[in-house]
Length: 406
Image 1 (tube, rainbow, N blue to C red):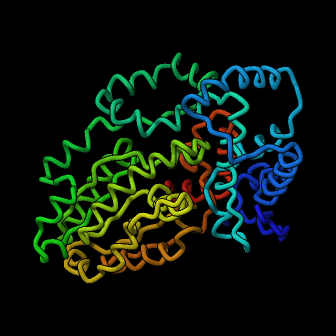
Image 2 (image 1 turned 180 degrees about the horizontal axis):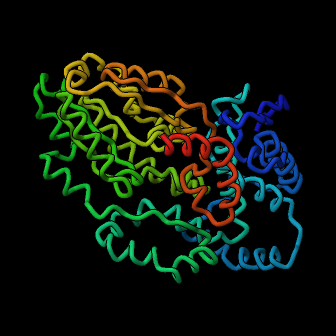
């Protein structure tokens, strides 16, 4: 929140990552500078009132005891009672938490971090919307829901359920769970789950050719074929692939300000990852946003974890392994529309993707685009739907339409 007023976030270039909410609304409160200014004023007012913001737990007994007060405050909010916190909350709800500001602001203003801290404090006084619990609890619910993909998908496609979710759940266009279980695909390929004991049994030669794929909820359950494609690719390159057992990453919890729940998830996950990394087998992840959480939000929370590399970071270290496979592939041209968080928080990764494709005898063109407007679940939230579509139309729509014509 230590914005110096440089105004770099008031960027009109639709093909630049920072700041999508500003570009989609043209409202200054929906920029890093605007949110930082509002937060500083909010902190000043809290300090004047003697509020200790370090004492705002929102779980267990404390949450239960504070429920009557939160109900009372929320009713007052519905009746129009003024609280400056509502203005700050309005600005924070418009943030995509894409972290473009962290990577592109000259002084690295980290809006997603202080946004999460604000939401934690704000919802210690007011009731949370249902969508926060749906999104925050997704990683915990999805393993059970994925056991019944057909009924779940049928329910989510029901017109009445869609309307209820839109109006009362605050969510739209819920993605379908993949009907082919990841574990079944792994078993058919003879892929084992990684444990420290299993990894320690590997010989030095086997360990040098092994890699552990760290799961995330979004690819494992909603894009299962992608995970299996990665496993197949690494196998074709001669690597022994093992998959880490699924544990909630906690990123959705952090985004919505469930900080204590996030820290609990981070603590448990870090123990598992440290155990796996102690065997000197590298860890890699597929989804950029979830994978980068280990080196950003986890570090900030004090749960330092071993390096979990983005898949392209790791592949770029093994370019010589690509040569045999390149001989089997006809040369083609590919176009890549980069992920916002990946582009700004791991900038070298774009060059790494090009090196990997070159190693496979292919050409990869990085398309100059800004934000796609989704940013995790942002585009699935009813309140953000209009802005999400606007952001998409700024740069992605034209590129996608051109590619479809070709």
